[in-house]
Image 1 (cartoon, rainbow, N blue to C red):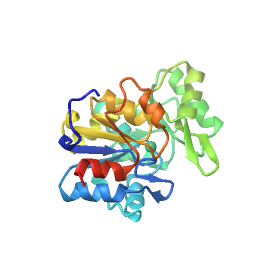
Image 2 (image 1 turned 90 degrees about the vertical axis):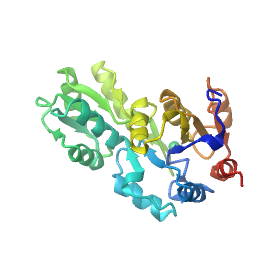
Image 3 (image 1 turned 30 degrees about the horizontal axis):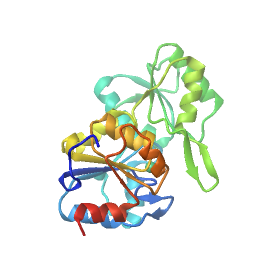
Length: 267
Ligand SMILES: [Mg+2]
């Protein structure tokens, strides 16, 4: 354990979504109940996702349909985190985007300028893009080679689907890195950046706010990078053995949200 903290002392929760609160279109056992119990006692919480393609309202609708009522203030995506980071660090940048409408909208909503001409771009933002073309990748690579800063919303290499694992944002980022010899700066988990922005939204101290998730290399590493206590659940990507093999391991590992709810509320 990296914290001399008891579960009951936690004062905020940052939840991963897929594999943690739901899987596909199915809410996971105990998830709606735990969130409802936290709300009842006024514990702040945030739903934080590396998914940069679904707009925040889409996340809100999905959660609400699953019995987890949510508002826009409860949701934070890697697209929003990317937009917030650039708006703070480079508000006058001109961005070439490899990504979907959700990412473009988030960047525009933050007052940032987009361009379709790689010669004009001083920034390339890349994320999941299910309509990617060779032309887009070519122009992004050319912009990066001309010196544009290279930002990745997230680097999840694969996405779980009914068909199996399919290429995720990380696969496209990897192509651009290979094509340019430039490593991307990653905003999403496991970067501490997105967690710090999430904590700022919650207004709770890192040391008393838990990062809750199902994946070693994003949720738990990301929480640890932001100096947060971490809670792993076994309903998604990583196994108990994989969490146990981490150095340091997560602070707590639970079978599912039912077990976390019971442990936190002592029911
Ligand atoms: Mg997950």
